[in-house]
Image 1 (spheres, rainbow, N blue to C red):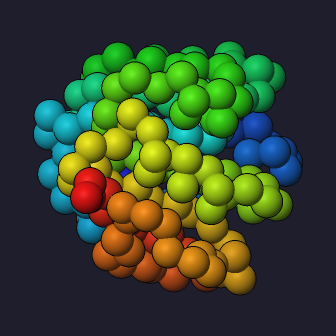
Image 2 (tube, rainbow, N blue to C red):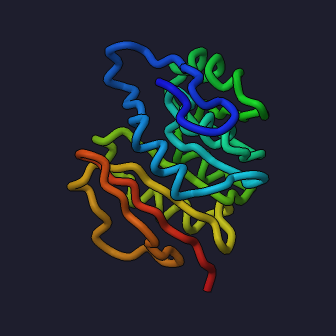
Length: 180
């Protein structure tokens, strides 16, 4: 996999070959999503279900300054730590379940990207928990990468869907958090 933009553009990061556990986000999808986000200079960024760390690295490459990556699978630890070591800024990695990280969170982020495994059944519940947590403040943006058939069936309080982009069989939904 390659980083698609910013300071690290073109750098290659590792991903286990033949792994069904890591579904690397497609280069074109990442390039498009980060193009929609624009300049990240000075913004904070949270990558949940980080896998190889490619999303966190894309954010770092484009200027995000406070970056955290959350990955439950401890077998991905070495690969994730090796990959994020090329970052121009520190990427804090947490090897705990996403649900536990969200429950314990104390810091709000400007951008939150979720890329759960496609079979993960609780993605919308997780988005709702994020919207009701300390991870968000007015203007926080939440993005979720999901399979096309797994769409949001009901509104989530305090979230406004601002965009949705299709990439083959997957979709990235963009939400904006606002407090009432």
